[in-house]
Image (cartoon, rainbow, N blue to C red; front, side, top):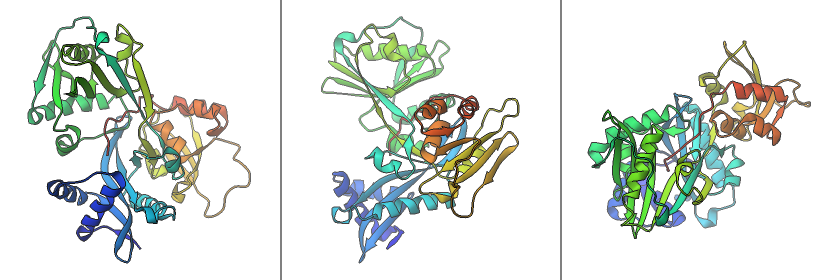
Length: 390
């Protein structure tokens, strides 16, 4: 039986999570977890009163093309081993999506244990992470710039960090809108040190969250509004050359830091990070800020393997979005006009992770090539970035 988790089930939720993700909570940590559960939508599959599988959905907002969108973060998907491979998780995921649709969520994100598994449910890659491993010998200072670095305590730092973060978010897609509690309880770990860069006008324009352990300097999050600020933060890291043997710089795929380094041939690893999917296509397209020139009209034929309310043809015009959906069945012949696209590919395109013409060449988008070019011209190209984890 599938039902919503209540307070009486919290012990079972923790027990399953500890087993599935291989960790152990103290009594104090359990109390904090119970408090977090009350803010999440948790579905469980029960057999004779025992929790066998579960999904958690977080309530978030993300910014796409400068606009906030309601996003349901799917997390802690887990099941006892004896209950696996019998479609329990599939049923929970489908019901979670139905709930998100009823509650008006436009998008859903998740961090996949298996990309192939979640692709079956309509999620697709939306961002990557890049990690630079830099040896001590390569900690070479860059050209000096005016300004200063200041280390701040958490309470003092949060409003400063958030101001920088929100300005950076304006130029990028997919980033999480962070509340004060999210900064305090999730983003800034207890072992992190916070340093902020102030420019010549004493305006905060960059920050770094980092930790130093066993002679490893770990840059956990670096956000800069100018390349000058980024170089200044790099120079701050280099000031630790007597304390460390290696630097790990975790960043986003488009970060230009390697280009500036005296030795750009440092170990660089780029790997897929989060996946996303549009929960309600009609709602998302109506809110999405397309660029219209010469009264262009775009026709999209969307296929969604799970959310049947998304299957249909969408006419996108400057005056609005028109929808045509068959009550049952599918067309025998492929449409002659427009583009055919699956829900995952459409998500990756509109969030800015991939170009529609690239997916057309890879046959993930089909139809008329001119329409793929048109779609590309209708999108403000911004990088898709996510620093957070849930």
